[in-house]
Image (cartoon, rainbow, N blue to C red; front, side, top):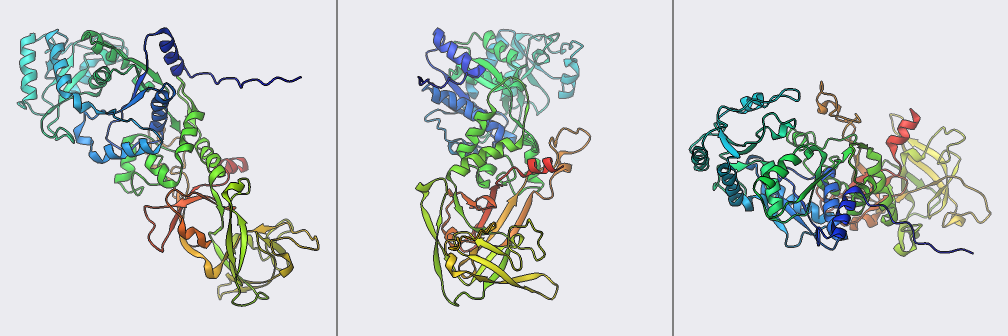
Amino acid sequence: MTTDKEPAAKPLDFIRQIIADDLASGKHRTTVTRFPPEPNGFLHIGHAKSICLNFGIAVENNSVCHLRFDDTNPGKESTEYVESIQRDVRWLGFDWGPHLYYASDYFDQIYDFAVQLITLGKAYVCHLTGDEIREYRGTLTEPGRESPYRNRPVEENLDLFTRMRNGEFDEGTCVLRAKIDMASPNIVMRDPVLYRILKSSHHRTGDKWCIYPMYDFTHCLSDMLEQITHSLCTLEFENNRALYDWVLDTLHTPNHPRQIEFARLNVNYTVTSKRKLLQLVNEGHVSGWDDPRMLTISGLRRRGYTPAAIRSFCATVGIGRRESWIDMGVLENAARDDLNLHARRVFGVLDPLRIVLTNYPEGQTEEMVAQNHPQNPALGERTLPFSRELYIERSDFMEDAPKKFFRLSVGREVRLRYAYLITCQEVAKDAQGRIVELRCTYDPATRGGSAPDGRKVKGTIHWVSAPHALKAEVRLYDRLFTAEYPDADKERSFKEFLNPASLTVLTDCMLEPGLAQAGPDDRFQFERQGYFCLDTATSAPGKPVFNRIVTLRDSWAKQSEAE
């Protein structure tokens, strides 16, 4: 006797468990999370993990997730980055609805909160230079020293802060600092800077402000004003949580979000520092933020990755508290797993070698029926034109082939997938000895690829009819860096590890003609070659360009096994 059992529920990660406990205890009636990027660059794969976490929790709890731009650094921010971030979040499959916010929306309120801290004797204007502030801060083993301006009267600090806002001081001449504890074991709490002078135009507020709040001061207050319940951030902000709580506790704010830290996503063979990514773009090492070799979300999208593949990757990686490295192969496998289910199978010859079927009628064309997906009949069938002249892959022929070479060779028979059995009879070469054409014969009795006499043919290769072929450029992308951890060597620049073979451009590829109708959302498996998509950024009418999304197998793992 057997009994059907429900599959065991997947255990919650530690953040979801905290949220479940808070809801069960009645601490919160619902959850409100937020994804708070700084609009100073394009999003990358690490941000995708945070997007999936914050928006995923909202979906799971039928609640909301805010998209908020923490735009407190006008010299490095732009509307272009704002628009790209919104595009990326939507593409991943998430929607913030009416909950789009900017930290700059709260600049007036944040300024008022700073005035409150001064009034409470918890903040002061300091004229130490940046270098002096760092020097006075002390070290991990030595306490800091108090600024000579730390004990100014409240009235003087209020006057100086007002004058800072009015633009009376130059950049770098003074800052507003919190008055906490210069002997704190947590260096973050040694009178951190709350405001600095930046005489830069802001992408939203223009020239209204010449002082801007620091990220740590802005972030907690923005969370509070939006009534965020759980403020989720990466472990690099763990020490900053003390400041987050100090600001809200000192100001006695009406609510106090809980900051929870999780491990950031580290993927080998790449860099995810915005500063380093910007270097690659500005110095021309890549074609732009959406270069398909970059692990930016826009780069992955242009490369041909699907939102489902990236969401699956983030789910596989999971949420934890311990920093670790994820192999690039895990991301590539997520793409393969998704594409294998949905990508239509097609023929593409990337390094073409012409063959002529000498006994095939000149001028004749047949239509061969091919499956779009052998494991998914719902994707239907297509017809392929077949003619006297064809292209096959150059690597599918060997003039002096060893015994275990099961593809085409002189005197050997091979199967053209969905078509006929052919035998190579003669090889034509140019003056330099390079093979330029194969002269073969076909067996008319083997239409569809099987012999009525039952003879076995081990080799099967793909092909494209030469008169009907779509000529295309194909770009083969590989990992951008040769080193597993390109920015780990402090003595060498990460750029020294750029992979010179990260892009191979093939200009004379021959594809089956139906690919002329490929659209921006189509994904294909070029049989025996890998997964490909149209590069909408560079394709032109009559001049298609296809990107290889990923190989059929993890070529790096295969290479490692061989070594």
